[in-house]
Image 1 (tube, rainbow, N blue to C red):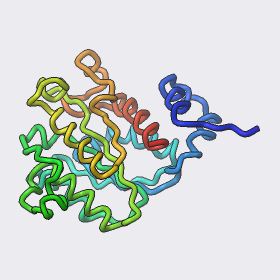
Image 2 (tube, helix red, strand yellow):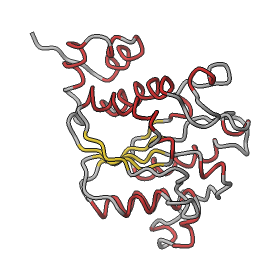
Image 3 (cartoon, one colour):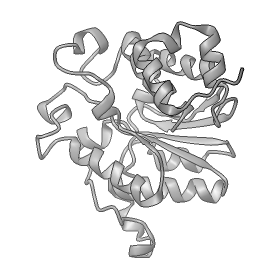
Length: 238
Protein backbone atom coordinates (compact mmCIF):
# COMPACT_ATOMS: atom_id res chain seq x y z
CA UNK A 1 0.00 0.00 0.00
CA UNK A 2 1.41 3.39 -1.01
CA UNK A 3 1.28 6.10 1.66
CA UNK A 4 1.35 9.77 0.63
CA UNK A 5 1.95 12.78 2.87
CA UNK A 6 1.65 16.45 2.08
CA UNK A 7 2.54 19.54 4.09
CA UNK A 8 -0.99 19.97 5.51
CA UNK A 9 -0.97 16.41 6.81
CA UNK A 10 2.47 16.92 8.31
CA UNK A 11 1.52 20.20 10.00
CA UNK A 12 -1.61 18.63 11.48
CA UNK A 13 0.44 15.79 12.90
CA UNK A 14 3.01 18.21 14.26
CA UNK A 15 0.45 20.37 16.02
CA UNK A 16 -1.26 17.33 17.48
CA UNK A 17 2.09 16.13 18.81
CA UNK A 18 1.89 12.79 17.06
CA UNK A 19 4.76 13.44 14.67
CA UNK A 20 7.13 13.51 17.60
CA UNK A 21 5.66 10.52 19.42
CA UNK A 22 5.16 7.90 16.71
CA UNK A 23 8.49 6.63 15.43
CA UNK A 24 7.10 4.74 12.43
CA UNK A 25 4.97 7.63 11.21
CA UNK A 26 7.88 10.01 11.72
CA UNK A 27 10.14 7.83 9.60
CA UNK A 28 7.63 7.58 6.77
CA UNK A 29 6.85 11.29 6.53
CA UNK A 30 10.14 13.02 7.38
CA UNK A 31 12.36 10.85 5.21
CA UNK A 32 10.28 11.97 2.23
CA UNK A 33 11.60 15.50 2.78
CA UNK A 34 13.80 16.99 0.09
CA UNK A 35 16.08 18.18 2.90
CA UNK A 36 16.55 14.85 4.68
CA UNK A 37 20.21 14.02 5.39
CA UNK A 38 21.66 17.30 4.12
CA UNK A 39 24.43 19.52 5.49
CA UNK A 40 23.46 22.80 7.13
CA UNK A 41 25.35 25.98 8.05
CA UNK A 42 23.76 28.24 10.66
CA UNK A 43 24.54 31.94 11.09
CA UNK A 44 23.27 34.09 13.94
CA UNK A 45 23.74 35.64 17.35
CA UNK A 46 23.54 34.05 20.78
CA UNK A 47 19.98 32.82 20.22
CA UNK A 48 21.35 30.44 17.58
CA UNK A 49 24.36 29.18 19.50
CA UNK A 50 23.82 29.12 23.29
CA UNK A 51 23.84 25.59 24.79
CA UNK A 52 20.07 25.63 25.35
CA UNK A 53 19.57 25.98 21.59
CA UNK A 54 20.91 22.45 21.18
CA UNK A 55 17.51 21.17 22.31
CA UNK A 56 16.17 22.56 19.03
CA UNK A 57 19.04 21.38 16.85
CA UNK A 58 18.95 17.85 18.24
CA UNK A 59 15.45 17.62 16.75
CA UNK A 60 16.85 18.67 13.36
CA UNK A 61 19.39 15.87 13.61
CA UNK A 62 16.98 13.28 14.97
CA UNK A 63 14.09 13.82 12.60
CA UNK A 64 15.81 15.13 9.46
CA UNK A 65 19.27 13.62 9.76
CA UNK A 66 20.86 17.03 9.24
CA UNK A 67 24.60 17.58 9.75
CA UNK A 68 24.94 21.00 11.40
CA UNK A 69 27.83 23.47 11.42
CA UNK A 70 27.12 26.55 13.55
CA UNK A 71 28.93 29.82 12.81
CA UNK A 72 26.84 31.82 15.29
CA UNK A 73 28.51 34.26 17.66
CA UNK A 74 26.91 35.93 20.71
CA UNK A 75 26.17 39.60 20.11
CA UNK A 76 26.12 39.29 16.34
CA UNK A 77 23.57 40.89 14.07
CA UNK A 78 23.26 41.67 10.37
CA UNK A 79 24.59 45.23 10.62
CA UNK A 80 28.35 45.45 10.12
CA UNK A 81 28.42 47.48 13.35
CA UNK A 82 27.38 44.42 15.37
CA UNK A 83 30.29 42.55 16.92
CA UNK A 84 31.30 39.64 14.68
CA UNK A 85 28.45 40.34 12.32
CA UNK A 86 26.62 37.71 10.33
CA UNK A 87 28.31 39.21 7.29
CA UNK A 88 31.66 38.10 8.73
CA UNK A 89 30.28 34.69 9.64
CA UNK A 90 29.13 34.09 6.07
CA UNK A 91 32.53 35.20 4.77
CA UNK A 92 34.07 32.24 6.62
CA UNK A 93 31.61 29.63 5.39
CA UNK A 94 32.30 26.82 2.97
CA UNK A 95 29.97 24.84 0.74
CA UNK A 96 26.86 23.35 2.36
CA UNK A 97 23.54 22.11 1.05
CA UNK A 98 21.52 24.50 3.23
CA UNK A 99 22.32 27.90 4.78
CA UNK A 100 20.14 29.21 7.61
CA UNK A 101 20.15 32.91 8.48
CA UNK A 102 18.78 32.91 12.05
CA UNK A 103 18.01 36.52 12.98
CA UNK A 104 18.80 37.64 16.50
CA UNK A 105 17.48 40.61 18.48
CA UNK A 106 20.82 42.44 18.43
CA UNK A 107 20.11 44.81 15.54
CA UNK A 108 16.98 45.93 17.40
CA UNK A 109 18.41 46.15 20.91
CA UNK A 110 21.45 48.09 19.67
CA UNK A 111 19.33 50.50 17.64
CA UNK A 112 20.86 49.60 14.29
CA UNK A 113 19.11 51.23 11.35
CA UNK A 114 16.53 48.96 9.75
CA UNK A 115 17.27 50.37 6.30
CA UNK A 116 15.50 49.73 3.00
CA UNK A 117 14.94 46.43 1.24
CA UNK A 118 17.13 47.69 -1.63
CA UNK A 119 20.19 48.34 0.59
CA UNK A 120 23.26 46.68 -0.93
CA UNK A 121 21.45 45.33 -4.00
CA UNK A 122 21.61 45.88 -7.74
CA UNK A 123 19.12 48.73 -7.17
CA UNK A 124 21.73 50.88 -5.38
CA UNK A 125 24.76 49.43 -7.19
CA UNK A 126 25.75 47.47 -4.08
CA UNK A 127 26.43 50.56 -2.03
CA UNK A 128 28.85 49.39 0.70
CA UNK A 129 27.81 52.31 2.91
CA UNK A 130 24.52 50.45 3.44
CA UNK A 131 26.21 47.46 5.09
CA UNK A 132 25.67 49.18 8.45
CA UNK A 133 21.89 48.69 8.18
CA UNK A 134 20.10 45.45 9.01
CA UNK A 135 18.73 45.30 5.47
CA UNK A 136 22.12 45.84 3.89
CA UNK A 137 23.59 43.10 6.04
CA UNK A 138 20.89 40.63 5.07
CA UNK A 139 21.33 41.38 1.38
CA UNK A 140 25.09 41.01 1.72
CA UNK A 141 24.74 37.59 3.37
CA UNK A 142 22.40 36.33 0.67
CA UNK A 143 24.62 37.59 -2.16
CA UNK A 144 27.77 36.14 -0.56
CA UNK A 145 26.20 32.72 0.00
CA UNK A 146 25.28 32.44 -3.66
CA UNK A 147 28.84 33.42 -4.58
CA UNK A 148 30.16 30.63 -2.35
CA UNK A 149 27.63 28.10 -3.62
CA UNK A 150 25.42 28.99 -6.61
CA UNK A 151 23.32 25.89 -5.86
CA UNK A 152 22.70 26.93 -2.26
CA UNK A 153 19.36 26.58 -0.55
CA UNK A 154 18.84 29.48 1.87
CA UNK A 155 16.25 29.61 4.64
CA UNK A 156 15.55 32.52 6.97
CA UNK A 157 14.42 32.33 10.61
CA UNK A 158 13.09 35.70 11.78
CA UNK A 159 13.84 37.20 15.16
CA UNK A 160 11.79 35.67 17.96
CA UNK A 161 9.97 37.72 20.56
CA UNK A 162 11.92 39.07 23.52
CA UNK A 163 10.64 40.60 26.73
CA UNK A 164 13.22 43.23 27.64
CA UNK A 165 10.83 46.00 26.53
CA UNK A 166 7.40 46.40 24.97
CA UNK A 167 8.78 46.88 21.50
CA UNK A 168 10.48 43.49 21.56
CA UNK A 169 7.19 41.59 21.69
CA UNK A 170 4.30 43.91 20.72
CA UNK A 171 3.70 43.57 16.95
CA UNK A 172 1.62 46.77 16.92
CA UNK A 173 4.21 48.97 18.63
CA UNK A 174 5.41 50.89 15.59
CA UNK A 175 8.89 51.65 16.93
CA UNK A 176 9.45 48.06 18.02
CA UNK A 177 11.26 45.01 16.68
CA UNK A 178 8.40 44.32 14.30
CA UNK A 179 10.05 46.84 11.95
CA UNK A 180 13.12 44.62 11.81
CA UNK A 181 11.04 41.48 11.37
CA UNK A 182 8.94 43.02 8.59
CA UNK A 183 12.12 44.05 6.77
CA UNK A 184 13.54 40.54 7.15
CA UNK A 185 10.45 39.11 5.47
CA UNK A 186 10.39 41.77 2.76
CA UNK A 187 13.94 40.96 1.70
CA UNK A 188 13.15 37.25 1.66
CA UNK A 189 10.24 38.00 -0.68
CA UNK A 190 12.58 39.95 -2.95
CA UNK A 191 14.97 37.03 -3.27
CA UNK A 192 12.44 34.20 -3.17
CA UNK A 193 13.79 32.79 0.10
CA UNK A 194 11.46 30.73 2.32
CA UNK A 195 11.05 32.36 5.72
CA UNK A 196 9.94 31.00 9.09
CA UNK A 197 8.23 33.81 11.01
CA UNK A 198 9.30 32.90 14.53
CA UNK A 199 8.08 36.25 15.86
CA UNK A 200 4.51 35.38 14.86
CA UNK A 201 4.46 31.60 15.11
CA UNK A 202 6.74 30.92 18.08
CA UNK A 203 3.84 31.04 20.51
CA UNK A 204 5.60 33.01 23.25
CA UNK A 205 3.91 35.78 25.23
CA UNK A 206 3.97 37.55 28.59
CA UNK A 207 1.87 34.79 30.14
CA UNK A 208 4.19 31.90 29.31
CA UNK A 209 7.58 33.62 29.07
CA UNK A 210 8.61 32.43 32.53
CA UNK A 211 8.02 28.87 31.38
CA UNK A 212 9.97 29.15 28.13
CA UNK A 213 12.61 31.88 28.69
CA UNK A 214 15.69 31.83 30.92
CA UNK A 215 16.01 35.64 30.65
CA UNK A 216 14.15 38.36 28.72
CA UNK A 217 15.85 37.48 25.41
CA UNK A 218 17.01 33.86 25.51
CA UNK A 219 14.81 30.78 25.70
CA UNK A 220 15.48 27.90 28.06
CA UNK A 221 15.73 24.24 27.06
CA UNK A 222 11.94 23.83 27.03
CA UNK A 223 11.50 26.98 24.97
CA UNK A 224 13.98 25.79 22.37
CA UNK A 225 12.34 22.39 22.22
CA UNK A 226 9.05 24.11 21.44
CA UNK A 227 10.77 26.23 18.80
CA UNK A 228 12.66 23.22 17.44
CA UNK A 229 9.43 21.37 16.64
CA UNK A 230 8.29 24.38 14.61
CA UNK A 231 11.65 24.54 12.85
CA UNK A 232 11.57 20.84 11.96
CA UNK A 233 8.14 21.20 10.37
CA UNK A 234 9.44 24.13 8.32
CA UNK A 235 12.72 22.48 7.30
CA UNK A 236 10.99 19.24 6.39
CA UNK A 237 8.50 20.86 4.01
CA UNK A 238 9.35 24.58 3.54
